Image (cartoon, rainbow, N blue to C red):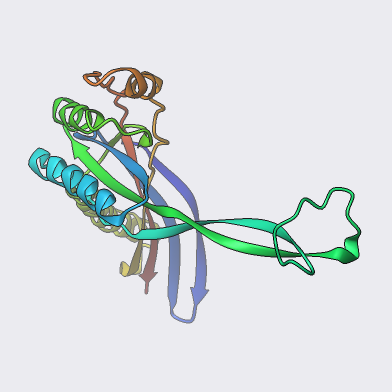
Length: 245
């Protein structure tokens, strides 16, 4: 564990000395799980076709027990075309070479179908279950399956345990520093007035998994390459106030 002292200074008050001090404590977590996302975009003429497909995908992910999500909205999709009409006949005309005063234009909205996106977040210790889910989804022959990058992620329990550890160290330090101040101010009694904790969790940028992306387009039974596991840094910045009087 590394400890960095940022700053400290003394404020002399009537009959007392107030000492303020900032100190940073660090810990490192080895993540136990990987995380990633995937999504599917589907366009169809009929809503029921999208619903049937997404229900199959939701069923696959539920059986896998490592992915959450599955909410989706279905929206109508339109294109907009501009048509030119003869002023007299009111029929569509080719305006090439025509007098601009002999026709008018009108923009029309044309319904082309429905579109929707469904997304999932997956967390797992080994890639086997994730590979199985993706392989089953690929067999549905989807054109717009988007696979996110896979990265190691510390669980909330791991993060909380690390902060508990650092807080214990920080509290112990306040007692030790009070004793140190007592030695500095021989005729005073020094104690901790206030302690403020400012936690910080450093999240590493996810690794790009190019092998997974290429396999997703070429093979049903692709094997996911695990990203390199790296420790995640937990920092706890503590602001102390001590009083000696």
